[in-house]
Image (cartoon, rainbow, N blue to C red; front, side, top):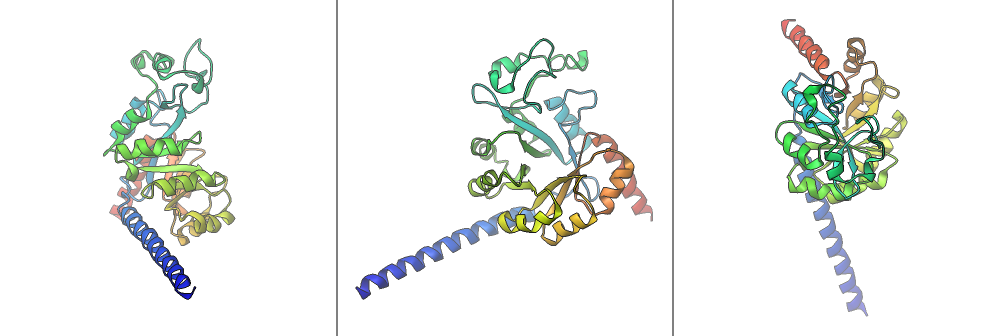
Length: 287
């Protein structure tokens, strides 16, 4: 009996050592990646183009994402939904009603072929007649090596998107926006893709420390309703960067956001924001 107990104890100890080593090695690899997180292209603030650069360009399209690349944005924000035949496309709204004339219905009620036939550029101008709803794979192909992706999960699709991202070897290029109350989805990403960067939104400042203990996020997301200097300070004390959505999208607001130490700004005015950042950096250099 003693011999059996000794064997069982040894087995348990071996299992503990193995699991500890496995987790630790994963943490080392993940930390090594995080240390290589790209620096902002325009000074000290990351510029995130919300739905791409969509001023006079159809939003969430390859053209809008290409414009963000051309301008020197750090990330493009994409909204991913699933089609009727199980494909993944970038559409912000749950329906196509606002994007095409004479067609209504949920994105999920159309096949990819049907969606690709929709002329979503016509409502903007004749210049975009040939612009179509892009697939997730088309976006990855366009962005790889050129710009980061701010992935806004509109549906619980982590299990299905991770294999695609791994196939393109783009775990390092994507931050996953997931509200903190979708904790199961956050843990799925961390479990199945330890290199992937989850970017949960904790809501109020008081939730930051608790969230950090659960998932150790490298970056957290928020908006102007919760952001202030104390919020950013608490996040940084917990080793998390802060990406925020702007609200007014003007210089006065950007100055306040940057003064508080916020790391990144998601905006519908990325071109104006980049010009502002470059001007600020030039003034700092002169001083």
